[in-house]
Structures are given as structure tokens and as C-alpha cells.
Picture: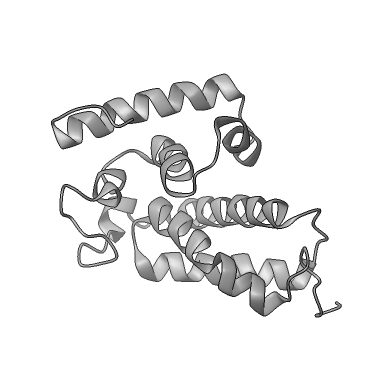
Amino acid sequence: MNSDNAFAGLTFEQAVRKYADTVTGVCVMRLQNIADAEDCFQNTFSKLYIKSPRFKSEEHLKAWLIRVAINECADYMRKNRRETTAEHYRDESAPFNYDKSDMSWALSKTPPLYREVLYLFYCEDYKISEIARILGKKENTVKSLLKRGREIVKKIYGGDEVE
């Protein structure tokens, strides 16, 4: 692997620094447990380093990292499903602030199917078409998930729908 600017003009270390928060956010939103999220975070960046894929742009790199993080979390949950439920693993002390004015609090209360779409839309500022590409879903499916997710968040907050 060429370590100089191998990842869309970034070194591996620069890529980790730039996208650490994004990958962490995806893993934490998916797993609801910081220790499990850290494992998937490490696996995601290990795959980046080992596979050393070429990217057209930094946006392509970011989308690849999000997709790999989602897959790592899904694999983790599948492997650990027999032992206990995801709710059991939930670390109530971190990383969420359970103040109802915080979007992460509401996202932590939504089912994973909606949580991913809501997180990518509101926290990572992806457009519906980009979310569809990252998740491998049709745009209309993403729109439906976003609409239903907003309704769930509205019920959680007990107020106006999230715009």
C-alpha cells in the first residue's frame, strides 16, 4: 500500500482523523453501546487499511466507510443476537445526552431501520439519493423510511414533527 495520499488524496492517518466522528456516529447509533461501537470502528478502519481501495473522491471514501461501518455493526449484531438483545447491551451512561432537546436522544429511541436513515440525513447531511446509494436502497424506500422515522421522532418528543 502506498501510504502517501492513498485514500482520495489523504493518508490513512488523515482519513482516520477526518472520518472518525462519522464512523463512530454510525456505529453508536446502530449498536447503542460504546464498547461494541469501538470494536466495529476498529474493524472498519482495519478494512480500509488492509484492502486499501482507491476512491474517486473524499465523498466516495466517506460513503465507503459508512457502508462498511453499517455492515460491521450488522455482522456484530448477528453474531451476538443469540446471547442477548441489543437493548440489553445499551450503555445508558454514554455516549448519549438524554436531554429531550438533543436529536441523538430521539435517535437512540428509534428502531435501527429508521435510525440509520435519520442519522445520515440529519447528522451527516446526506441527500436522499446519497443515502439510497450508501444503504443500497431505492430512493422512494429512503423517503418512506425518513417520513416514518420523523413520525416516530415526533411521538418520542411529543411535539412537532422534525423538519
